[in-house]
Amino acid sequence: MIKQVIRSTIIVVAALYCGAAGAHGKVSMEEDACTRRLDDESMVHLSAYQPQHEPSGQYCTDIPREGNTLLVIDLADQALRDIPVGIRVVRGTSEVDDETVAYLRPSYHPDGVMRGETSLDKGLYTVFITGEAVPPVHYEYSLRVQMINYANIFRAAIGPLVVLLLLSLLGYKLMKSERVQVWRASTRRASRRRG
Image 1 (cartoon, rainbow, N blue to C red):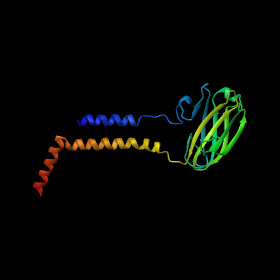
Image 2 (image 1 turned 90 degrees about the horizontal axis):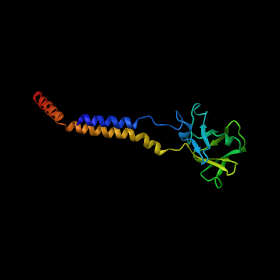
Image 3 (image 1 turned 90 degrees about the vertical axis):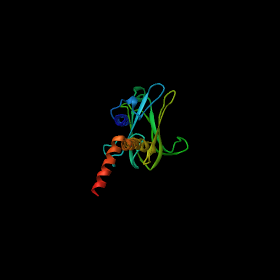
Image 4 (image 1 turned 120 degrees about the horizontal axis):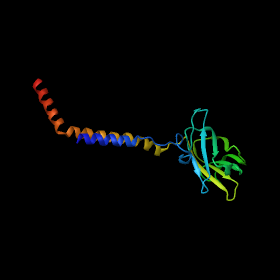
C-alpha cells in the first residue's frame, strides 16, 4: 500500500515538473506565445525589452516594470516586408477610443524588423500592428505592465500544494499502517517501563 502511494506521488510530481515550453526559449516560432498568425499564414513576433531594469530580459505580453520599454516586432514573412506596416500602442483595449501612447507611422521594413520605444506606466495596453495591404493586415497584442498575473501564481502554487497534500496523505496512511501502530505501541510501553 505504501509503495503504491510513493509511486503515485513520484509520478504526479514528475508530471507536474516536466519541462514546459516558455514564451521565449527553445521553441519554434510557430509555437511561441509571442507569435501572431493570420489566415494567410503571415506571422509577426513581438519582443519587449527594458534594459534599464534587466539588460538580458526579454518579455512578451507580461512586462514586469513600468518605464521605458523597447518593442521589437519581427516581420517573419517576406510579404509583410513589402508593404507599409505601422504600430500603435494604446492604453486600454480600444484602438479608436483609448489614449495612444506610441505611434510609428506605416513604412517599409525590408530587414523585417520594426523597433519602437515608449514609456509604459502600470496598467493594460494593446499593441496594434497594421499593414496597408488589400485586405488590410491587422495583429494585436495585449500588454500587462507591472500587473499581478494570478493565473501564473496559481500555476506556480498548484504543484507544491499537490505535493504537500500527497505527502500529508502518505503520512496519514503511514501512521495508520499496522507496522507503525505496533512500533508506536512498543515505544510507549518501553517509555512507561523507564518512567
